[in-house]
Length: 388
Image (cartoon, rainbow, N blue to C red; front, side):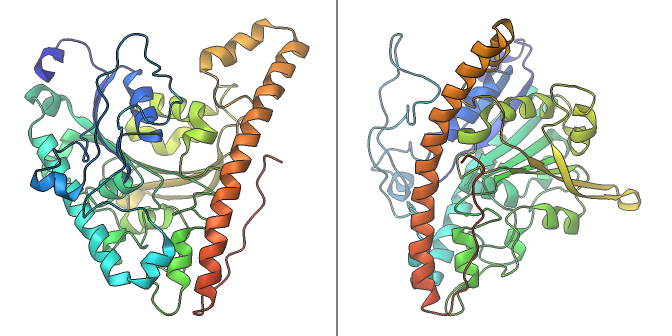
């Protein structure tokens, strides 16, 4: 089937690794936005194996019938693929108290999941058509999929790998990694690499997260006690040739909730000029509409070893996140007063939705922290959000 796309003028090919919940929510949103750029997206589904097979016993979800014209397939629908909960011995929903109760068990579980995902990636790449291997492909993943891409041993593919992106995973030693070495990039350091994570990512982020609570627990925690919640230090240590780390203001584990339109512009650039990704701030600085979208926080440029790593802060957008770029552009044709009213109304709705998500995450983390404190855990200070 893929051979038939050889003469379709594809912009590129992405091999995508979904998160621990499968091909739903932000996983499919990101795949859809990249496909719309003119790229082929190959997203193997680790939950689609038949239930009575060896792989299905590890992970399985029942799938919906193929959607038809007239079905609701709106971009913001959470799950368009599955119609059941997950089952299987390698299925999990991370809760820090569970990790702390059985750290060895969860270390083994996460490592087993990584090996499963690693094998899926090698199988998928091995079976790509020759024309894709010749032109090259990108790797990308979210959460557990981001961890899989970060650790993936892609050296055997050499220059076939055009670039990689790692979303909602911090690229450092944390509870997803059995050893400090497993918290580093496992592949080629000359592959252009993007690390994207929200400042309020409740699992791996820089402010307050499950990863920090687990690492700071004195009794049974593990992970880097000085973790920063992003991959900058790792990229610098390993001498990544072209690396960009982006911290999304108030972004949670689902980055599309706060920075969807930013990601569209980012991927449009990355799939066109991956080797220049570390210079994105300077390049966007030439565009009046984009020059304020990035704020450089730190950088490492070492010409002797050809290492170029930049960390940037990405402020919340001043226009509705759920609007398409076409909708945003259309407001320029309205009167200033009408445009401001429409924007304020929509952003007010989005702020309320985010407030619910922030509260849910905070409640979860505070409950875990209270339990951890009884065993000598250390309190993590939480910063206020910017939406209030």
